[in-house]
Image (cartoon, rainbow, N blue to C red; front, side):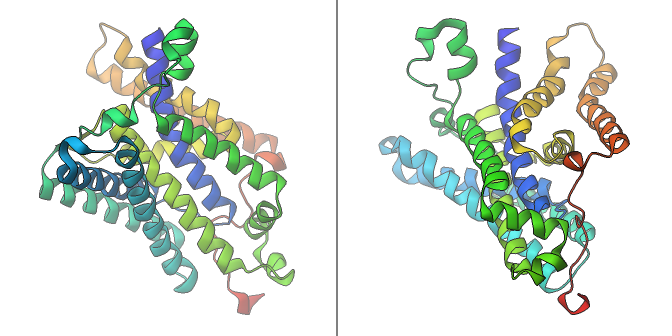
Length: 315
């Protein structure tokens, strides 16, 4: 049970990055279905940057730079994908759903190309990402559960809590939510709708890109040999499951992680049954979606302008 819970937390925090990034994007009224592609590009940029850095420095690698360089590369790759999405949907006014799906296909293609070009990478730098806090062993089971994780696990929680605070307790968050609810009213109040949508999408995509890096470096221990697009859809489902609240996503991500891996800890089940277990996060999301829609509570509904284009000339 202890190993199961630790694995659920490690995998869940991977989902948390993607969920937090998509929540920021959707709060601006953008529905970015390209998150799986964003995560693939983010993982590719981070893993390749780590590969180049360790190849150059070899035994003289700095643990700090071995963590910082891949994170910066991942943020840049994710932000670039968000910029592409924003340019197509805000400036060129393309359909958000079609653009997001195209971005997913593009990101998967980029990831497959880089894997084919470099060959499977088993990054030795993953040990820097999975290094636990120094006092974890002194706290027994409590320390193993809460403090035996790598830097990205705690970074995901910090980003989720910070995002929740900004959205609910700052002027920037209020403006962003108003853009997502009624962009025409926000525009009339002097808020730059295009700027907020560009910024939210780029920042959200950059954070979502960290989900891919976390999955490779932390959960798979540096094993980058195949595309990871499947977990991107779970990140989008988690946004719905936690009703667009990043702080609730911390608990929700652990639940999703547990549901996703529970079949691996049950012996004597067939492959078909295992696949059914892996469907559980999606089933739970559908149930929550039906429940929240029936309640019709304003606090549990998506932004009113989610997925809808805004043309200032039609205001």
